[in-house]
Each structure stands twice: as structure tokens, then as C-alpha cells.
Image (tube, rainbow, N blue to C red; front, side, top):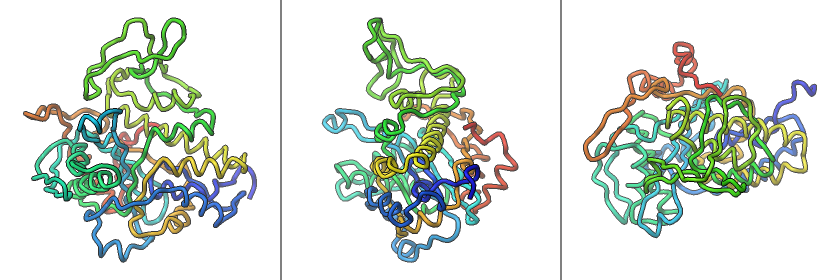
Length: 383
């Protein structure tokens, strides 16, 4: 295979399959085959996340063939919350659809304020009676009264049950993604380059007049309503091509309050998807050009996630996804990236998923995403 056509090695395809940062690779170059797969999969923490959302029968008979839908969740947990009794909420909820013909992959971000019905649930410590609320509350209600892995498992299970109730999709696998864990991945890469599609002002990272790093805005206990801190200049990421440092890259992907297009969560969803793809491309490039860096890079990637393989071995996910590449990842936006909100007493402003968004989710369930994208080209997010 010529240098111009070489494909990324096996080590990251399973990351697309099980989620995380969507790193893909393929066979054929500098790949030690099973050694690399074992290295990659060995660094992943596995635990039960789907629970009753998948069911024992489906798990026992799970096969790698056919279309796959994988639920990826990033958590919103702030320092001191555990001591204060505050609950973690799912900050990023992404459905990854892989068609049966393995012709590509589709990322659908569900707005965390989506107004949905959350099923009744008992985690063994506390019961939740069920009801309508923001979708990111499901993780919190599922994890109440628990800590550590138990809180993570039960919180994810209730979120998965909520997504199943909303979409009819039974997830085939799941992953909790620690976006802060990408710091080590980015440090190994040194930089990540991407196109910034709108001016972004940071509320989290800035500097004082003497160059010291400082927080430029304060927020309320929920992380909202930013107020400027005198004497601190915020980081500003202008529209155009950028090569980010690790700190800048993660900071950029966190922002939702001071975006030029005023697209809040939709902008942040899009930027997170863009960053994941940029990390993927940079990691594939660095891995191919520096085989000695590959094991360390794989280990760092593995530490960013907790995975439930849905009863299918990680090694099988890896080899089954080996034909995918970064350019085949299509990122999609619910509600065509436009706000469709209303206020609900006792809850606040919520996002209502429109009929076309529900049709998109049905396309993921029915494995007809290619037809949906062809009929709705503007719903494809820039990346």
C-alpha cells in the first residue's frame, strides 16, 4: 500500500466502536496486530453501565454484526460537589450510530436540556418515582445516595433507560468519557489543529496584566450567569484556523456562554465533536509517524473512559470497526441547531426535540441514517 493511501492502524477503530474519542485506525501499517489491540483494550476500565436498558437476553446473545448504536456520556462534576451533596449530571450525551454496512459513523448530540420522560427507578439506596424533566437529570436521579462505581453504573443505567424510552433504541454498548482525561492525550500530542467556526470567549481561562493564569468570570452554583472578574483578560479564540495547546483545546470545547453565534449548548456540542475529530486525526498522524509513541498514546486514550461493551469483547469491536476512517464520521445537530425552548414551572427553560429530530433518531434505530442525511443536508454540523 502506498504512502498516499495508507490507512490508520487497528488501534483506534474500537474507540469509535465503543465511543470515547473516536479514534480510528486500520490494519496494514506498523501494526503489531494482536499486541496493539491487547495494549489498547487492556488500558480500558470496564464495568456495567447499561444494566436493564439492555437486558440479560440481548447481552447474552450479542453479536458484532449488524447496525450498532453506542451511547456516550460525558459527566458534569465540579470540585466539592460530593461533599456538598450535589449530584453529577450528564453534560454531554452522544449517540454514535454505525450502520450495518460499516460505510461510516454518525454522531448525534442530544441537548442536555431536552425535555423528556424519565422512567421510575430504584437504585437500591433511593427511589425515583419518574416524571418529565431535563434529560441530564436522569443520571443524577439514578445515582442518588450512591458513590463511586455504583453511582456511575446506576446513573448511566437510568439515563440509558431514558434514551431508550425516548428513541426506542436499545444501546449496544456504552462509555463514560472523562473529557478532562484528554489532557494527557493532548500533552502527548503537543497540539491539536482545527478550524474554529465562530469567535469564542472563555469564561474559564484568562490571564492578569502580569501574565498569570486566572479565571476571567465567576458563575453561580450551577455554572451559569457569568460575571466578569476585573483585571482578568479572558482567552479569545477567533474564527479561523488554530493550533491549540492542550489547555486551550479543552477550554475551547467547554465554552457555551459567550459564543459569537449565541448558540450555547448547540455550539458547545458542535465544538466538542470538532475537537474529538481533530484529536483523532492528530493521534492517527502521530501514531503512524512515531511507532515508539503509540503504546503510551494508547494507554492515555484508554484512561479517558469507562466502557460497557454490551457483551461483545473489545477485541471484536476493534476488528469489526477496522474499515472506518475519520473522514467517514458525520456529525449531526438536533433541531437543525436552532433553539426550540419553552419554560416549565419548577424546572426552568427546556429544549423540545422537534419532529425532524425524532425522525433522525428513528433513522438511527432503523439504520436509515444515510437516507436521512441525504434528505436533510443542513442538519450535518460543520467539522
